[in-house]
Image (tube, rainbow, N blue to C red; front, side, top):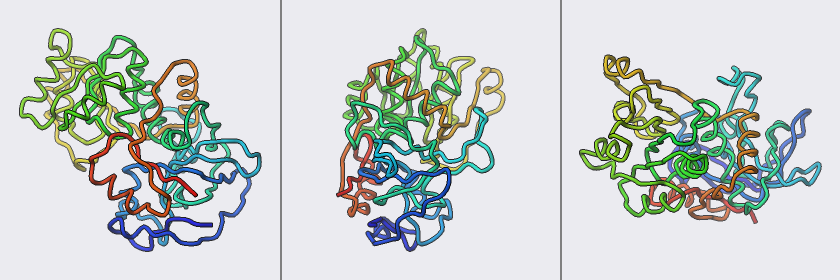
Length: 326
């Protein structure tokens, strides 16, 4: 089968189309013939060697296609071997595309519970863009922190897959959502998804500007931080508010002043991905509500994965980037 293979860590140019063996069958796992694969920032980190993936390697976590055994249309949940607990995964948990071949290929093999029926009404590109950001955002907003109607949510960033999904889900649930971005066009696009407003996070007074958009200037009930700006995120919270951390694209270390944190009665919650039960919850939410489909910024042929990574790293898009298979 055709796949995108990296023989070394490095820039996007290490991603090259090659012929590789089809995945072997194994008990309890199913093979999915993929028609679309979505990019995530996680894939960039894999390509750079952040997760010490074995070489040569086929990256990719998200995908949509059909089960080869039943012909059923499915999406691939990239959260493998989560386990029985809901608070955190078991020790054997892994993300598809880290240490086993991923979805930048014509076929991929995953545990049967990770081949999830494709939600109706989604295009192939939208379906491929759903699993990782969908389950991650659902777990962060609802499974972990039970965001409720009438609460306020600040989403750091406005254009990535998690940000766009968070705006869509939270606004549908009745929360008042504000985003941050250095690009007013991205804030306008977030408004179209349901955001109430946005602020320029490159401005020196952006925290005060964000708090000014909350009742009584009190701050937000919840901040979703996928970039690692903890100290600023906490300053945006109302007393007793929660900061949910699910990424570190801007930095790897954070420093927080301790006394303001405990006097503010704040919560700092780490989360990543989600379980098959979270995915089932997301699918029920999509069934019960009218939610804007995942935003697809641009599609590329599978063979142009390197160009797709260049576009992702440029940071100019809004929404997800998807590789379409021939």
